[in-house]
Each structure stands twice: as structure tokens, then as C-alpha cells.
Amino acid sequence: MGDLLDARRIGVVVPSVNTVIEGWYPYAVPAGVRVHVNRMLIGQTVTAASLEEMDSHGMEAAAALATCRPEVVVYGCTASSLVGGREYDLYLLDTLRQATGVTSLTTTESVLRALDHLGVTTLAVASPYTDELGRKEVEFFCATGHPVLGDAHLGISGGFELASPSDADILAVARRAWRNAGGGVDALFIGCMNLNSHRVLDALEAELGVPVVSATQASLWAALRAIGVSDVLKGYGTLLADSRRVRGS
Image (cartoon, rainbow, N blue to C red; front, side, top):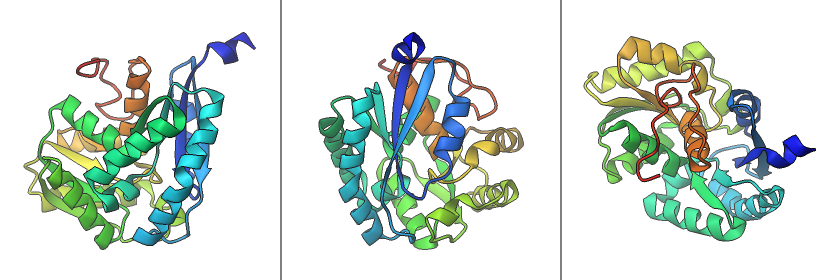
């Protein structure tokens, strides 16, 4: 019982269709860190309307998750912040803190912190999303001072199906985004919290010669740093293999 009480706890709220986070995060985190997940209901198709409806359940799910006393809660959905823009993302952050009473992060906030930590400005962007949602992703990064010089998307609209691309599929769309950017960017970003992007990060970095940041990886990195854990986690890209402290922490 002492081990449970002494554990560092991370809470993650995910869309109900997410099948990636519970499989990877508990496996990846260092000893002594536990990951607790709750779900917020979302329709089967990812649209602005379904994301808005999901967010209406999100704070209730986060508040329930906070009862297991995590040190940080992550709102684990990229798409709702992309559709709403940075102002909405900041609103989510503030609302999440009020609902949980603990340190809070959104996925997009985590990604922006990661890009700043790595000194990244220009990006190539890949995702499993539709082109419409992909355009929102590009707009979000451009509006936050990270020009996107090239992007590519897989065109998947079903929330559950976002987890279906194989490693080969993810590598292919990432390479297409890189080519579309002309290769002259500081980093490649792979969006979506329901995509198994962590499995290809090291291979892409070795091939492209730049950091590759993903939504799943950056959210885990930011959550660990938020609770003061800076262990090196190899196999998931430069970001998690970097033991430097977050600026200002």
C-alpha cells in the first residue's frame, strides 16, 4: 500500500475512442510514476460539432479523475484546441485548472512547450486527420509563431480509426510532409493523441536529422516535467531522451 501512496501520479483525460494512451503511457513512464486515465464521450466522427460536445463532458471527466489525486492532469485531445485556436486552448487550460485544482496541461500547450524547449521555429506537420482538420492544425501553429512550410494528412475522419495507421503508414505521411516542406525546417510534428506515432520517432529522426515531436510524446514529456521527473526515456525521440530541465522550472 505504501508504494501506491508514494507513487507520482499523472492523470490523462482522453476522448472515449482513444486506444493508444492507456497502452503506451504506463509502459513508458519511469518506475514510481503511475498513469491514470478517464474518458470523455465523443461521437464516432471527428468534427467541430462532435469536439464541442466532447468538451462539454471533458471537465466533468477531469474533475472525477482529480479525485485520485494526480499531480498533473493532461487534457489529451489535440483536435479540440486546433479547431478552437490558441485562445480557446488557453480557456481550456484555465477551466481545467479550476475543475481539478492541480497543475493542468492541454496537448497543444505541451507541444508548444516542447517546441520551445528544443528551440524549434519552422515545422513540417503530419497527421492522420482529414485535410480540413489538417488545415486547422497548420493555422494553429502558424498563429503561435511556428510557420508550417509543408504538411500531409491521411484523411481519416473516424475517431476510433485514427489509431489504425500502421508504422509504414505513419512513416509515409511523415515523409510526405517533410518533402512538401522541402526538408528545410527545424522539426517535424506528428499530430493526434490516438495515433501510435511513438513507434516511429527514433527511425524518423535518424532519417531526417531533425527532432520529431508528436502529440503523444510531447504530452507525456510535459506531464513528467510538470511533476519534476526528468528521467531519460530512450526509444521515443530526442525530446524524451533529453534530461535538461524545462526552461523556467
